[in-house]
Length: 419
RNA sequence: GUGGGUGUAGCUCAGCUGGUAGAGCACCGGGUUGUGAUCCCGGUUGUCGCGGGUUCGAGCCCCGUCACUCACCCCA
Image 1 (tube, rainbow, N blue to C red):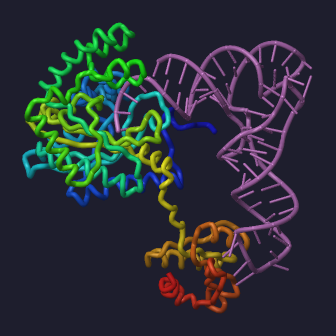
Image 2 (tube, rainbow, N blue to C red):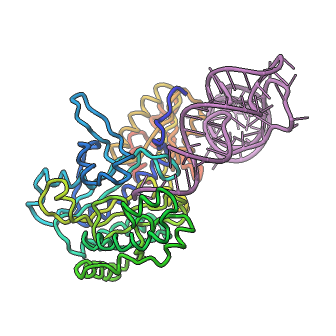
């Protein structure tokens, strides 16, 4: 093999690629029923858009972006996430001046320069949804419920929804300094990285996986205790709506998000069988993002569901969709004349909406029948010189083995009737 | 970016203390010159990840490198 795909970039081939499509379809179907419109977005954007929107100091921006210069010396970046680009597009089209909320969805590849491991690739696929122009907590609940519905419709039963609130910016600032002072005497000096986190983003310390850190921070003060009245009311309302909608969730006050734009509601769908990369979908509210990228005040909430990781979850639970047969009717032509006739009949059947195929290549009867069998077709049509002279095809039911001659002129309607 | 594990046929893997590659599945053909899924017989496929080194001799030992994988970290 001369070439392999770039590091951390997966290929999906059948049958797995079909499963991937099914996952994407299951995620988007509920959105369309809920009035979300489709957004087709660029795969790369101005580097500064992500730096501003996602946050200069986030790991995603500071060390995980695929950034390059174009021939005009513009700095461009392969999108590491979809929300910022979606907001940019909404503002660019002036949708925020129309009917609100604007509800949109998109799908496609995202790129992050990471160390690959299971569930973490440098190119991965997401389906995203965004609702802008309203801070109604019912909208938060609607979006969460739509994701929940998508996962359920795929047959996943073990996914756990973690729910939290980050409060308003002032709540978070207050809490951060409280937490910082609390952490210093307990885990300060542990190592350089932890010290840095205590200063820059103390919430992240609570997310440390090391058991000794977990133990030391077990009774740390929680953000939920520092919420202002408006953020608290919003959160309680979201929880109430979710309960009304029958969406089970787990209050997780330690939930940490890595992108700077999140406010108030945040959530993650976690799958317990996926190892270290167990978040298969996540999102939250981002009421200040529009201003950050130069727009007017425009509240918003959204999520992104990981298509690749969701497929891993389906495989872990053993609930993959069945592979549909590749054909319903399969032609077995004997000789060149029969093949030409078969090709025409196959095309005719396909136009009639029947999934039809034939044995290509110079295969013998046995090989062609074998191909028919493997296609999963219900019926094989054997066509040889004898049959052509008689103007018929031998239609064989591959499940029962019974066979009957059918006039070629009646073949298409006959098969349509049989199926 | 850091640390551990693994790279042998299309796939899953075996290969002893170094003696110049195997199985199962898959695929193709035949048994049945016009009938699949079962059965029987036969056949194809490898620069043993790549590059160097040690040795009379390396799939096996050493060094480097790349990829995959797991964890940290990060996140969908």
